[in-house]
Image (cartoon, rainbow, N blue to C red; front, side, top):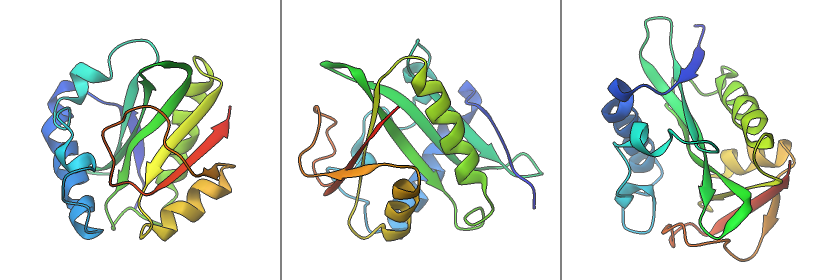
Length: 159
């Protein structure tokens, strides 16, 4: 199957929320301190609509949303952005669409920021290997107040 990415549209808000929630359930992250309780989940078109903040969705040949990724600012850290809400459904994993999402997100991030930060969970080992292939380096302490206190693995990358 072929996949494509495009910028998020307001009509996508609830669909990408459902995709993200499905992935969070899969990894046991459907609890407080993760994206599960993020008050902006389901309102991405209002959040990712200013310079330095953008979200893309991945679609299959039928136009169904199968994943997404965003770049967003971190309050108090003007030179550091965060790779946010990068998730793909199992059917899209291994297809290369995650690479397209990452390449697009990082290219955009370079326009506004010097570094890119991300948070994930220890049990998301495939995601960690993926991030490391892109040059993300694991760090011990969180950056900023993302609200995702349950995320126990953090990375940063020079852009």
